Image (cartoon, rainbow, N blue to C red; front, side, top):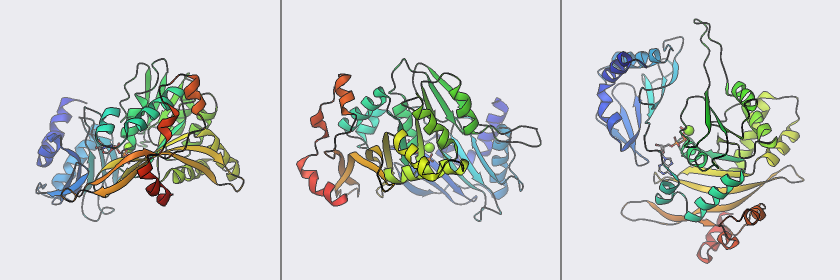
Length: 377
Ligand SMILES: Nc1ncnc2c1ncn2[C@@H]1O[C@H](COP(=O)(O)OP(=O)(O)OP(=O)(O)O)[C@@H](O)[C@H]1O
Ligand SMILES: [Mg+2]
């Protein structure tokens, strides 16, 4: 992007300049010119920053749209784009947005969280992290599931960085967000249609199709939101083991159902039963990210998908779970930890065959957690 654009955007966004610079702010939410909130450490606070008026705010959004070759106006009232520093911005303008120009900026952070950070934050236990590491090594087909802003992209980034060096990773996203640190990474980004400029749309689905011809070892789809779900499943079951994606769902079981629904969006010739079986057999691991009421983001489940039973229900078994044991009276933060549930995954033999340093005893649930696990299941 030219520096003229960069300067203009920085200037127009100066009312929130301090928030954009502040590394402790992870998200900025603008509900019209005079109401601005930020997220810090998972919690949302109102801040005194304001834009002069709706027009001033609108001018900055127009400049951002222009910098990425798009328009935001009455005919195109929504925008998803990136700021010059890589932050992700989503905008909806009136009359669709009732509060005035409504914006959310997910700040880009240079230092992406790693496996160690997730352990330090208590989002993963050391054993949970080691287990995921082993699964990435073995090439388990993995779906990262979670609600909005629950940490899915962060988790996918972390897991992607743990793949064996010899693998060729093809990453497909709507807006380049993942920064997977690996030796052999090829990245693709979708393109929106722009009729005035004669630009045709290129969807995730198109890119997955192309990716399959580009000799991938593993395919990573940033966000599975549409019929590309079926292509990802196909990739997973046709020699691209260790492929991954994220999906919006609140539990591992929901994630399976969600993927099935997405497959059906694009494919009406395959009966739903057959799609369900495909989901059940292609997926192996689900990592569930959750945002808790205390603002903490934690990995609430690591589960194995075993397939579909005779009644057509998914069989999903939790291997690790985050359990809450209390609440800090001063900070109101939840106290708890990730524990093994006692379930040994069916692919444990591969751990032994590959001499992975993860003994079977690591799957044993601690005695204190048994009543909690039992109650929750
Ligand atoms: N385990 C964690 N502990 C603390 N902060 C986290 C954790 N995981 C992610 N975050 C932070 O939470 C924010 C949202 O994370 P992320 O973008 O990964 O969520 P997401 O589920 O992909 O969101 P969306 O649904 O909007 O795509 C980021 O600022 C990220 O740094
Ligand atoms: Mg995301």
